[in-house]
Amino acid sequence: MLNHSNIFYLRSKPLLNRFYLLILLFLLPIAHSKLYAGERLIATGGVMQIEGAAGGGLSPWALIAGYGTRGEIGGSSFYTHARTQGGYEMNLGGAAVGFNNRVEISYSHQRLGLSDTVPNENVRMHSVGAKVRLFGDAVYDQDTWMPQVSVGMQLKHNVDFNKVPKALGAERASGIDFYIAATKLYMDAIVGRNVLINTTLQATKANQFGLLGFGGDKHDGYQLQPAVSVAIMLRDDLLLGTEYRAKPNNLSTFKEDDAHDFFLAWFPTKNFALTAAYVNLGNIADKDDQNAWYLSGQISY
Image (tube, rainbow, N blue to C red):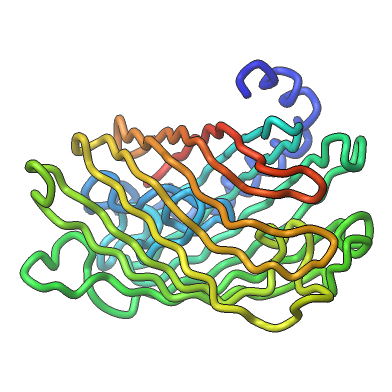
């Protein structure tokens, strides 16, 4: 993946410029706030997942983006690059703002390079999300079994629907995912280390997260898909974990597999995080067993 970074940068400089502008617009209100630093503990905003919500790399968690507590505004921005051994290239970027550790608004842009499946073509998607913490605190409620629970939605639009997704049998270019997530940090759970556990249940019609459209000839209704994440804090600033996310199988043209990963997230400061992961995306279009290393950088306030 790193061997291709310079080539990728040259090809996608206009896209990066849009990401930087987007991030600036999202974080501008925070820069003018006296509370921009946030008072929550390091790593308690998680990292940003592929559709832009706070959580793990694959799935949204109940955590709210940034480090803001009650009366504060926090935020995060990210950029992620991954390339599978089959030549599919994913480039993701976006930002999220958290208000009072209660409400999160997010945006991300995804681009999938289609390798030799459709030479010189990309599929692009916009995702706008909202999340509300209903009750609980994943970190501070240690005297109860109750996790932090949030509900959210992600409105997605596939810009290039007519190029490839429609030809594969997808029914529509846009869709809305709905989810409920529960997150809990267990202190001193394993040999004195803190352990984080998250479960997410998502109602979705998306094919490959929406990158290949929504719905299909096999299924065109909402399906409930579970996700699970487990991470151990090797140190206060270092998380080692794994994730699993189920996905629907809507198209008869190819079988869609579930996704899973192993990740290492490092938070050297509250303002910066770096995540490296090995992810298995399963079958993508005409290529089986697509694995990738991905690297994601994140700035938080």
